[in-house]
Length: 452
Image (cartoon, rainbow, N blue to C red; front, side):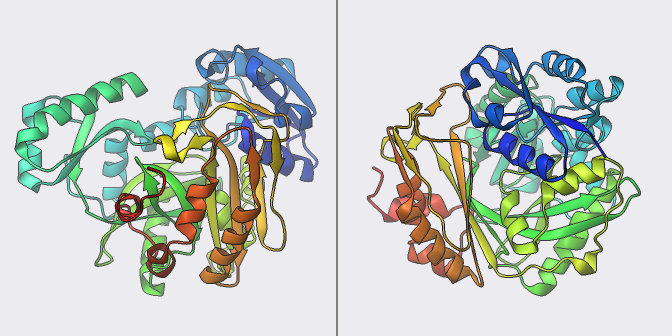
């Protein structure tokens, strides 16, 4: 087992990893930017090293500084969390070459599944359904338009190296294709340093459902059921839940088997997520694999009772999976609301600043994953998520009721947050009765005068 782990991240995920390490008897090292000197992850780790100034490009994205911090503190492994360098194959490769264990898959696997076109081809070989589209990256507009016309509009243009909705454009006819193609390529180049895109059929009003997988070094792979992540704004997830209200037991089995096959196809090791789109008829299609822990991993933990961060660490340390597929049972229901430092009434504008008062809800079935506290100053340099609130209940309605109650108790003053927005959704009759497709948020705004 590892003796010391460096956490190459910040905020709530850094705290989450630190807590798991301490429960396993492992010492921790935090890295931080100058803006995060007073952050809780710095205070709760066994040691901490400043790696640069506030912008992430000068700190959390500087792989060489993180590797240097790891070598200076003599750690055995690095946990990347999510975001920043978590899905950078070059960083995993640097860790490997420096004999520091990267808590995640091998660099070649990250590279394979991080290239969306290559990932599609990889899973297609093992007969995992994929959305009809181009065979790989498209080099010019005329080639891309020909593909779009062959599969039929509407289509979606996606960045090969994309994520978070960047480099992604929906196109409903040939007249607007040229403009959207150029826009997607330009955005992809700026966001990822890679302007390559591909084209696929647009599945209208689908469910976005992902399966959590675990795989050990011996090739044993299992899934831990699904999370429904359909509530999204601008392709950013807002609310996640497990299990999905849409899946039948038979469809769940089929998708679970497909998720395992996709992970096995690339020789996956550690925790990962296979993401699917599911249409109205229950047809499902692979869209991508996230080769890291997900923000929303907590809902799976609540319904399975399995600590995913500890599993990541144990797998990375060479331990075989002690779980079999038959051991995985989802009990009850869990729902998560991401709380962002944003103003919902001002087009969700970021709201950095000092938290003058913070009261977190509690009670049975409520879990808060957060790094904020009274007097904490939210810096303007990073993602706006400041908290995750997870409610667990014996069924979905109980979880929703508990979430509504907890959100009514959650007090954060000094800044604007999305707490009122989250509460409006969990009180919305359509969401409560039917769940959501990826078109839900747009429909929600069309039906309500709130937050305008």
